[in-house]
Amino acid sequence: MTIRAHLHMGCLAGLIALAGVSAHAKGPGSEAMFDRIDTDANGELTQAELDAFAQARFARADTNGDGFVDADEMTAQVMARAGNRGARLLARYDADGSGTLDAQELAKMAEARRGARQDRRMARLDTNGDGKLSAEEMAARRDPARMFERLDTDGSGTISQAEFAKLADRAGRGGARGASK
Image (cartoon, rainbow, N blue to C red; front, side, top):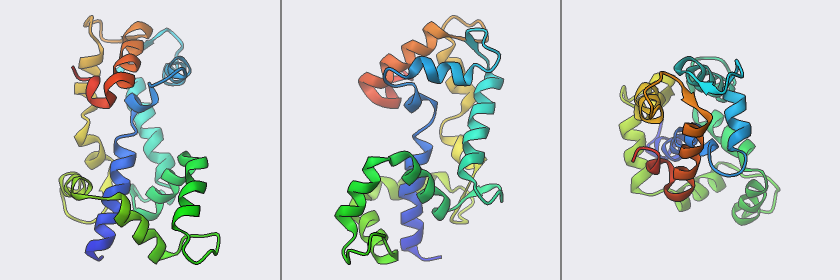
């Protein structure tokens, strides 16, 4: 695998890795997201519910079921969530006007959107250096247990709707980093 492919995967891995629960908690849909994660509908989130949500999210990204998310799967995941943004990217980077992005056009797009930050992120996440990220490698950056402890501000062992709403407020003001303050 070429360095360029590693860099491209780094950019996309960063987008998926950072689009965890805290990103979903932003905005007016936070109650709906809370309800999706709260599978027993008791108004509180358990560590098991968050783990199940994360596993399901990874499984959706791992379309070939091999236990890893590769560059193609990351690209598909990002494009699926991008909606209209995908159309804008296509218009911007489809140099030959074919209506699709070929490998060169994707590389140019990745190069334009990527920087040293994404390169460092991939190097940090891909701990075994195999050029792809396992669920464990992706989860290591945002340890679910530590995140759960930070969100469970009253120490009850569950995350209430009020605690989840605080996450949404913090995420809206300062991004995912705001959730850890």
